[in-house]
Image (cartoon, rainbow, N blue to C red; front, side, top):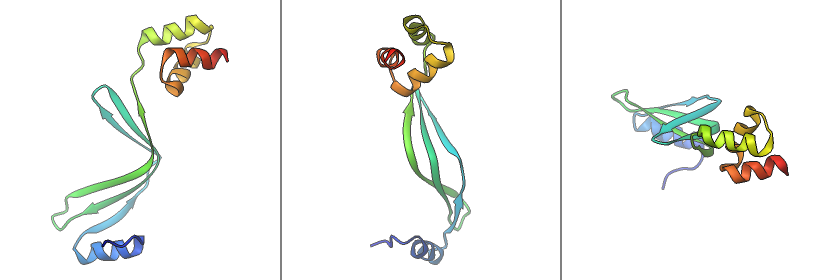
Length: 106
């Protein structure tokens, strides 16, 4: 069984010849086909094996972001009288046109 204490885990990794160092970041974005995975407030570790090949482990608050269409932005703006920026923010927060409109009007 692997240790759960970070210090014990690092000691075990050193014994196996794996170098471990923390990676500090504000946000991690993984761009996928048709969407992006956003990791806010990430905690990361870089692990390098004896050959020096790095592997990254990242944890944090994960959310998926879909690209916004111009049509959706326009629908929200027309349906609410909101500015472009307000429409984009509502679409990102609520995920679809109907929910964004209800949120702005609500």
